[in-house]
Image (cartoon, rainbow over all chains, first blue to last red; front, side, top):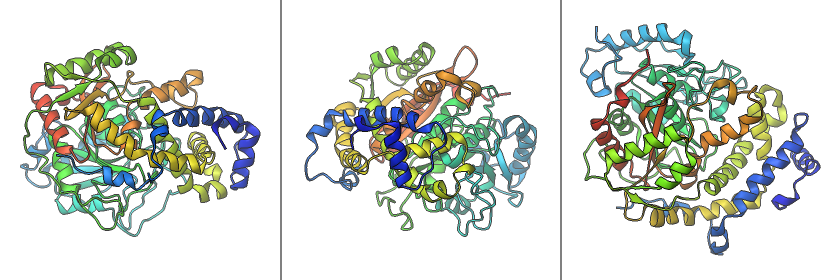
Length: 67
Length: 435
């Protein structure tokens, strides 16, 4: 699912499927907030250069002391 | 008797055992009703330099409520690695400090234990989530405190309360026995009266611990050793355009004190990196809390429940893609932003310290924007796993602290601390205490 597909109803369904009961009036607010958040993250131009081989543990290799 | 408000941690080590504990307890009795910084005082320690800890570091046989209703009365069976190391170094732990519920809030509000209040102005936020740590150190109730930083939770209270706070490199300090929020981002660090005091505390708690799977085997530096003069990078135009004028002026002046001709660089994309950080934080925090969110959602405050609900709407594919991207983002920062420099300087908080009312449940329409502004310059550092130090650099016209943030390469805590010590030798902002 992409960020653009979120709606209040979709949020309610997605959370209900995970056993999470939403507080009243929350679904639409979450949909708006998550659309903005996920959209901002997905817009990073660095993603287009992400190598196919990249995996999350690669971060540990980069996180080393650099003299 | 020695006045604990006037001593550094290094000086306090020379005071006869027991004298400082007594003096700090007297200050706590005076200030606690105004600040609500402690949630429990530890009476058994009678000697050592007084410290305290955020109520999410476990001590065997003692309650650790983590700022929550859900864990109120919970007694852990083991002691956190950081507390073990401070105990072994001879410090006196005076008790548990207030914090944001489950460390999931940037202001210091807490509806279960009451808000912690800023010692410079009780109407203003302390910053969070290590709210009690910031307030207690600023009011000179203790010489230092343990905090945790997942999106700014050491640096924000340090900045808002006018003290020095160190967010450590991911893996530098063991998180064993500390409450998890977002394991890919969580770090442990000290808040203290100066960079020198932070260095003493970091020396005690840093180093490999097999009980934390992410604990690093990188050698621990001598954090009190002077280093060659750091080269500072800064994005002055961005700061002038995006920070409030008083913040910008103080930070730019502080950098000039450190280096007459800093290297001007393009800023990192703070907002995109912050969005990546939030994607990771929300997904992991909600996974961490999934059982309680299913079984007892009504026991969370409305604000924390709302944040946790949002995390269940993060697609797994996007969460993992953001984690896959992390290495490239870190390498880009080190190569392009830092480049030939050692330290990247920016404000700790881009706005002046806001009030508790305008950032709380009754904050109205401005509240979400203020919360976003509060954390705008801290979260990106957690996504990159880097060390960062918040250093007091002045006061605004209302008398609230202003803060400089120094960000370094992985495991370059010694570089940051040396730069801040040089700054604090040339200035006295860190010596000022609320009355």
